[in-house]
Length: 538
Image 1 (cartoon, rainbow, N blue to C red):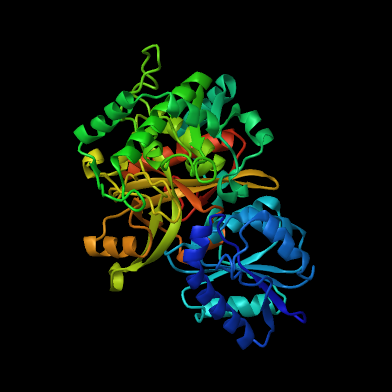
Image 2: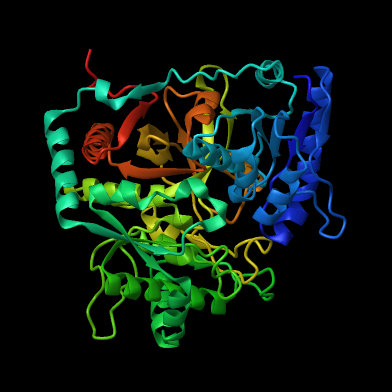
């Protein structure tokens, strides 16, 4: 590369997050620049540190457009991420850029760059924009240095994706194939509505599925405003909220309260969350929604406490009863699938999962997690790479071994959640898991899926992983058989991953097969990742 390499750093929309995360970002940028210069290339930042805001991130689409006006159109460009970032800040510049693009993240759980990287990469893939990508713990390992040298010499980086296999090459069991086809036909015939409380949460361009890709499946969006949700909360009584709260206490759920609302969880915050739970069910029922998604982060964050407690409860079959104002019990004995952060890939996936698991007589609780972090655990033959999956607030309590009795609610971090609100925290129980991700590419909807194991780790290891990520959030210790760390990162097309349990390995295979068949029947190009299921064709 004859031109100087230009480096940019994308950040959050929230000033408090950008300020707190900046020191780590600065350290990572220094390490990446040193590696580039060691190869003999010149590198410079494409934008300056802002002494007023006290960070050096691109923090809005407006700022991103301004920055790219001064970057040479054909310059080699490196996007360095050590934090969560809003992809929309960069997309106007990246999509028009004509030079080679490399995205880079640090391998750390703290803020986290890995989640931001996966979201940005998925957004670029949706847009059909070519790019290369790398990640590293210290930016001195051979994987990173060799990849950087390849890119800097003007060549594309070739990652190992040998773990990915088109599902059309796998012979599914006839009964499960038929079930998936029947469920797909039923969905197309009867239709389903996704209640979307404001699209585009947190700049996640990749999380918006164009309507024309959903309509042939019989799936339509009911676009709802979060102002309507807030208005319904205002109409919900304190008595109703306290009934939900008392139900949770009676189930054994614990709330870690403190005296200072700026940093501690308060009962008043939880009661507001209970009102949101009630209001969501009433609106969903009024509009006939089969699933709902609350944006919160840039819609409700300045009005009410976090949406997470409500979200986790909605995804659980056993949850506080809610009636409409005429006394009808809403969604009786059912989960109302909630797609966190209005991720529509999660919405469609959760809808399919709910129908397949219900048809098979399996517990249908499903949720997304962030692909947050991972590191090896164990020694010798027992060593394996264990991922730390963390959702930003809550999972359905059915995912805990002891349900609500194991659930703990802690205040959301003030840097992201100024008005607080409680989480549903715990460690997901060991067991067989079916995982998946629906994503958008220029040629249509696609899905990766496979089998995983949620495992139990010693408490000391669990605490270590909480301490280096977000200790208020629930986690799942996960092993993906047949997928290495770098294979997963190279292929996974989202910051999110969908998970659902099966009671044993045999029924996990059945659920995976039926889900695959339903995806295929809906016209989604589907891929198995990792160990090929045992019913594969020879």
